[in-house]
Image (cartoon, rainbow, N blue to C red; front, side, top):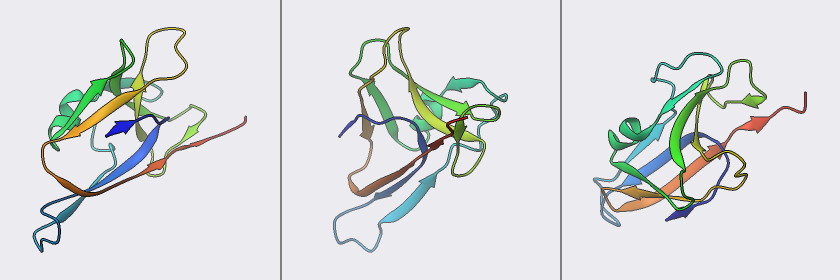
Length: 116
């Protein structure tokens, strides 16, 4: 799955066999990670703990969890959001998310951005 998005507030991932009663939905909101206000941390190990891998399409892209406190972004469940960091001057990033289990659904919520 090629994801070419801005910043995500949370992910909802349902894994299991098609039509299986064993399918379970996991909500990932990134808020259990301690991140200082206005800063970010690498999200690789956090994503991996849910069986999610990050593959950069744009050279130099990396996964990050940002604390939006004091920033122009508005998290759905404050304060943290998921985003991709990129090289200086790059305004469009592409990456793939890989999953260790077959998914029956995948959804996400993008964060808001203030004009002030």
